[in-house]
Image 1 (tube, each protein chain N blue to C red):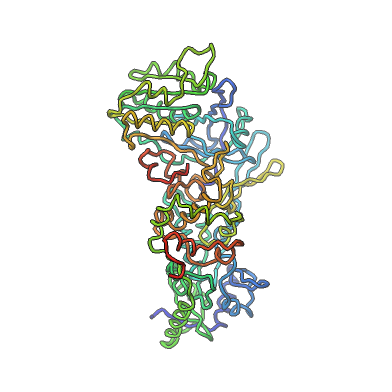
Image 2 (image 1 turned 45 degrees about the horizontal axis):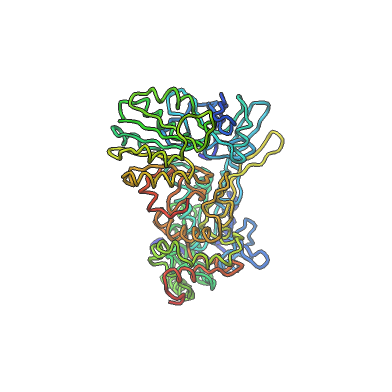
Length: 274
Length: 347
């Protein structure tokens, strides 16, 4: 079978993440086969037949028999069509694609996750991987922010599950809030610097809007993080996922197969075209 | 030289005709004032067509068609079925390919035969086909294949190579497929020493006719160093973004996946795309890492002369000269490479 041909899959469950439901999480199960095995940070191509196809990071963590989960913000044609879909609808899935967070290399390290908005989706796969094999990692810190309290994704995990994990701390912030919020009000990079984490034996992983990533990296560098210990994921237009349709290159790297996970050290040697 | 054969023009035509009984032969065909690879080639005009310059369009589309179905889908109520398109299994022979275009097929083999994913459509066409090359006896004024080691007489990756020496051609099978072709369909004798020497002279004469040189030596580093140079703005200023350079380029392989739907049925197809178009890299949210002609032209040149060498180990250019000959605003790759390296084009 050609890698460009997807498998038919069924949407089993749809969960609105934000108050306005501009982000929804879709549970998806392939009709004919088992869910493929994947690593945190990988993505899949989702098809809405007749509309098109787009890359979406897998937000679930692989477990045999468990469905795939995708948290999707409505931004364009395909994501718009997915947002109109209902439970029971058929979509196409192919993957997994791309590299992944090097979780094996990170064993024993402390991890600092920094997310903004829907950027928590790929981080969630990684965080839950670390939570499940908790003994393999050092202290876990999550700094996460959204535009407003209504825009925070994965609330159950943020407020109920992750704070209960031993050796894990969750720090939340919002850009702006009304009376319904008594937590931090600050931009993610500012809040990160205020919290100030030690770079000792720590890997910082950041996903979010490009502008947030830029200022987060600056903040991390001021905190003493070395370039190879700052890890991020890139978003770029992709079509094939297999490294030959040509559009997702940054320099000689194809984000679809060589990424989406890069260290800041790797990014520094590429043209600034992302 | 043991494998050098000789075939008269009539014997060549007869080989192609015999192959046609089992598969399709695509050969240079004069259509109005240009040469195209066509299955409706004319036996009586073949030699004449081969003497003309290179084809207007490279034979790339015989392996990587401009549009091809990937799969069909059918939906009824909530049921959905996918049926992968079955690439045609028919054998075919592409005859009279210039060494530069043969080299480009070699490059596409690397692109589509990537280590991680097994592409099937392009690969099946390659497996089912024979690539027969022809020494370029009349290089065009825009040809610079020699600078890139892609012609006019070399065709290392061909299955079989022909060099016209007047009444016939010296034939050199270069792969098992080529040897098989001669065994199954050919009628030939061993080439005389004089004929082999004549073939060498033809190649030499063709090489002498190529006056255009591209300063490619070390150009990958020169281009990378000039990533922020004003030269990109200057070169791209006249570009009208028509995409003809990518459409005619034998090594361009970028594509898009699109769908067409009628009622409950549809097809997902792959079609050529162009890095010269603004929506090539535009994301759903509106962000675009290459928003203007400056970034797009820069990426195209860097892709050919820096990124492809880094990724695959060869320049993504064969010196076929089509972009040079057909750009409506005369954007000149040689002039550009010369400027990037800080030399004048004639050096």
